[in-house]
Length: 498
Ligand code: ZN
Image (cartoon, rainbow, N blue to C red; front, top):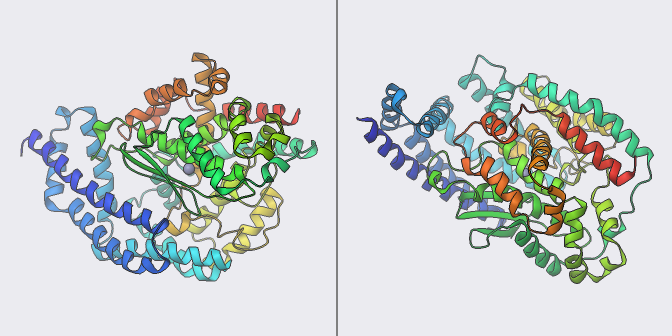
């Protein structure tokens, strides 16, 4: 096989893999949106079959031969082909770690664990989910041991979601955060809390749907390539830059909840929509890691969406859709949207206390994977950490250990990427300020210069570069969590006058 033949075969193979992934993704999306509850049974079978086919395709002799040919001519390959080769080699190692039967079992477990988690959460009964979580942890440990026995199993988990992340790096990051966030929370707690009654006005759901349309326009999400649906837990799913879907949830008396879900998921969607289409149908399509992804979503949600300029710009639309808001000023909304207070639910947490929610999960995951705790003890441990880190008492499993879906999808190692992403975003902001009048751009309502900046430095590359490369390219300097801490302190100074 010549190099050119190998590249052509690789294109063909990746198109087939895309097709299977596309079908599975649509099934998942359907499961989360329109499908009836019991549909998880047939969906699990179909997903198992499709995952089996994908496994065969990726691990087949002919696929391995393509990689061997490319590897033996590595010095003739361009950067993108080298990256494809490296990503595939890593993935192949993972897939070959367990036999196909176990791989299919794992895929089916994901589907069943998701249903069990939904039921457990609905009934606020951790016992329903526990046996599934135990199997998820066992599988995670098995993968870690088989794929990379030379590193700590939890390092394997972290690297899976943020290429290059280790416990050592994560702990240095978290301790830098702790040092300045803990005293900041104490200062905020001693200051007068903003009045948040504006956040609780009755905002009819039909009008909130109209608000979502306005937000999507303001973010610059093209509706012919990006759809919006409704699910209990908002998420983004993507196939190519021509098909990205976001979801949100509506609560009549909590319009900010949906508003910031749309902006958050919209940030994920903008990233996916901005990937160079030349990478579509290859393994270089899509955002590179969860850390970089969350740096986009949390940038739009917090740095853009919770800024005074953005709220000022949106204010006339809010009043038009919900006249009761007219009793309040834009400044009232700004302060309510930035209220910082330790709380129970991560996704509803403010920017300042948010990283503490992540640290709880980080500590727990580390213990779960190291076998330092058994699954039956996890709720108690969760509640104890919430008391210790956030000073709040967890009243039940639903608002405690069952609040997030990640563990049901084997997303162990995922959470730190949220905190890292937030911190990356603050450093993008500092860099953008050198090049544009950021506040004026946000207040103008036309975010095009911000999209252009992120698109050029980050989005276009998809997965063709490592997260380290992308950060260096965007920031022109090493990552430094100090920017994030400065940003949080300045924000609180502005909101609380401290
Ligand atoms: Zn997100």
